[in-house]
Length: 618
Image (cartoon, rainbow, N blue to C red; front, side):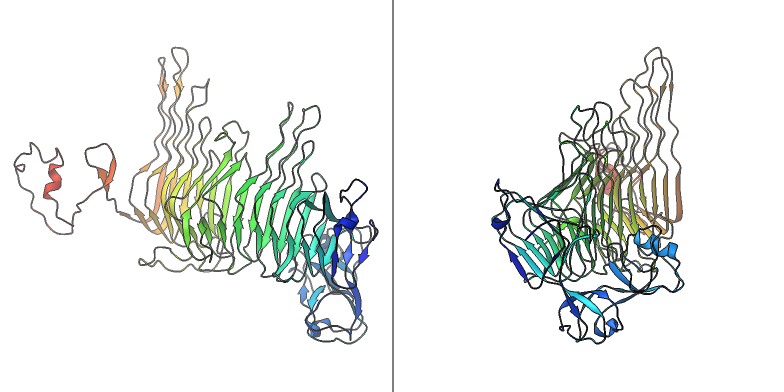
């Protein structure tokens, strides 16, 4: 078998890669442009997978093909035009990511923009599972299974060819079994599934063949994608490779092991290169890998930027996002965007995926030694839930936490339908934000990040329940006499329950001594909106102290705004030990007689918990 040319499979193929090794005993060649064999209408086999190559006069929808109109395309999917309609040539070029081409019925393209286009243009997905023999002059490529066996010493990979620049291979399924590494240089597409239900099953570690390039793994059918030994697209002297994993069917996506996409530095060490981005686009549930690192390289002139992580399962009505480890540290200032089609769990699920077994601590803006307070920008996290299920919810059990060290936190309900009503008997409110853990955005030497929920345009909020929220300004930076500002807290819900303290205080300045003023940091504002607002703890938004022998100016307090009916439901107080504790008494809505003199042995009703003696038992 030669390389650097398009390869057409005529049957399921198993390749013994020991026969592909070069003179040094390493497999470094790439299989390029692998496709199936051509079949004419009338000879399709029911249940087999095909890609349309020529429309002819065949009615492909009659044998299983899917019609898609302009405005409904999905990035990475391949289409064949059946009618240009009123969709303009400029729009067809925009959809396909091309320029100056003329599109007509029979033109095949891969969508580069999602949902683009308007007018009456019509297409078919080229991929279909035959439901009959077909008739007419149309043609399609039948897809086959490819297995790459053990025996690889070095690397095996797939690359695009000049004849097929959009993909490396179009297969029914691919199984790569070896202990080496694996690479792709373009989209590797599986349409069916192997005996284990997987479109792509990669046992070696996925590496990047080209610095800075996208490595695309895609399942167009219902087969899953699994990387059994993780991802490492790092380069010591170049930009890390990006990884894009798409699943358009019901198959699961899973990454075992670690994801490492670190940028390197040039040989003089003057310029650091960027880390790689990770994009997961799936209609099925996704479990976050146990470790993710995408840091920029270090240079004496300029450092590289950290890569970003996007997980989007918002088009799956049963697609959840959860975690595989109790602690996930995000190294450097990566931006995290996590959008669930149904539920988002800041927790680890049991093997059945139905019960939360423990909370997760997610920490952004970290180094291996701890929080990184020297970053020029701060990584933030945006979480969405309920993208395709109006009852979908966000759930973070007690013991869970998000710590961003200066980064912003945004949690939004994605469904645009009216949220379910509050049910006092449910511990987890459908359609709601159920955050029973803690949120921290404080960072020493930096202003704190903000915390927002359901404040994005068009959000129809459900119930919001929050534990503690701490956006207090961190300790003032060295060599400054200005305290740091607390972060904004902005919450909207149909009902809002605040079970813990919200603390947005500004921090104190360092001592300016006899020469400089000390200026306290301003407190962050607190905005809460809901038909009912229940407060169980205090809200603190004071400014920090300005400390100086010369003179000090305190920081301004933040605004506290509550829009809705407010209920105070505090059961916590200081019982004399300088700690906030839950009391063992409560006042009922009845008259209680309190004696005019202390109880025997008590000097005062207010001393030694004397007053508590007169409160009714529970």
